[in-house]
Length: 245
Ligand code: NAP
Image (cartoon, rainbow, N blue to C red; front, side):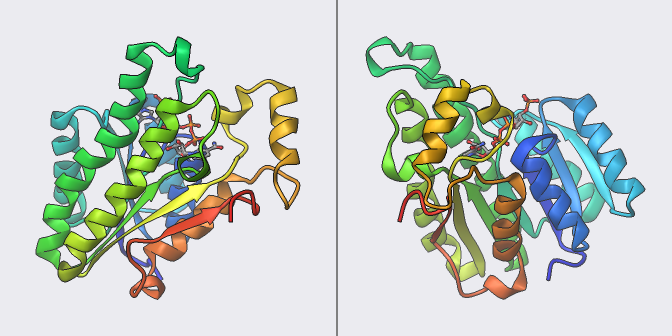
């Protein structure tokens, strides 16, 4: 399915990004793991290599165009191509609208939306030449339904969904597909930071009555990254336990 494909994953050292990279590696993909935290990323890549995966760690901030160029260059120098891009790096800076600081708005929009734009622009050049590629954007259920206290985050993820559709239309003629996975509430460091009461209230809104796991997201990404999804582009796949339909 993804045997010998080269996959670049941003925010790969922990959480959902790490699960995605692990799932792709388990199916034979070669991994370019990008994260701000080089030590954590190198440790993760060492684990992948010990399990027999060809992998390389790159320190990179997705908001920095020089870092983005560097990550693409490392991928080209190491593996000669990029078949799969997963725009996963993301942050939250929650707060009610009336109290939200400009810098919290800017930080979230810059990492979650501009970061994905910069990575997509850089990688799609290569994919267009290859006449082959899969781009998968990690959005969020709250980009589809909104969430009090997350105007910045919801706007960034709704924007990412719009960009997914626009890029899908542009890149289709080059045989590059662009899709989004919109996770619901997934147990990671990001949601561990929420108070227990809030997490219980969230779980109560989910028909399947539990938070999702990072592996639930990785399974959807694996499908979209594979040969089996060749006729799917511009779509948003919700992996949310039925929270939004
Ligand atoms: P996480 O545990 O906080 O991991 C995010 C990763 O992204 C970290 O490794 C982080 O690196 C990295 N990162 C942050 N800013 C970056 C930047 N500017 N450049 C490169 N890497 C950067 O988050 P997660 O829960 O796994 O979330 C992954 C994605 O899923 C995000 O896009 C998030 O919005 C989305 N999502 C999560 C949930 C959920 O319930 N967890 C739900 C819906 C959507 P450092 O920490 O080392 O800086």
